[in-house]
Length: 273
Image (cartoon, rainbow, N blue to C red):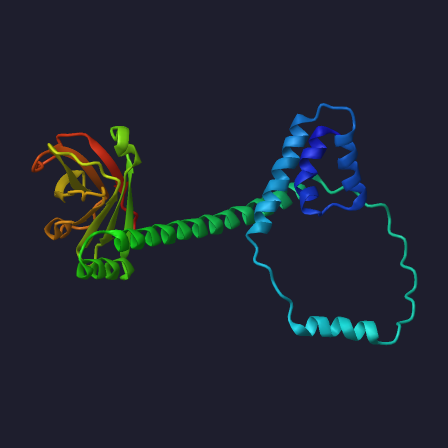
């Protein structure tokens, strides 16, 4: 078997779709004198593809009638021995295009499976972020009514969670800080939750939203003694439509208007609805 023949059949081999003779031929090829770097790498990729596909398939429990049929066949009278089948002619090796079609079909299934897995991962991340927001609200030193209002906004239809990540300008302790905007565009409401914001006696943290290429000041973010931030986004800045991004900058005391003057230390994109 040549290297090219191996590469043509390796996807079908990983799926268990080859007959025993063909499968042994592939195994003998790998066991023969090498090197076989391309063949070994192709086999590893094919096995990983099949494993990824299998991991996305939900286990299926057969209905009771399947086992009942098996039980009846076991307990029933033995069937007469069937006549020996006619000997089949030697099997011809499938042409290369047949294996290519099989590989393409597998690839289509795997891409679909990976899309499902990515959707599940995104859903899990969103759920984890929502749980973290609820925990931050529970621990925040704010009055009960504001907590209830924030939790209600968190679970309302249309609410999005915008995670703000530190930029390269977030140096020192700021690199360990985090922020989330709880954003409900239909209601025109947004809240900012922050954690581990170091106190700045001579400067203020300022929130910005970016819409259609314009930056709009959305309010100051004063941290508490424990470094937590809980602040309402100014509702009037949310009336012009869905923003594309939220950002936080470090400004002079009292903040600025127009565009950020100080360093932008956090940035997060608003996902499309």
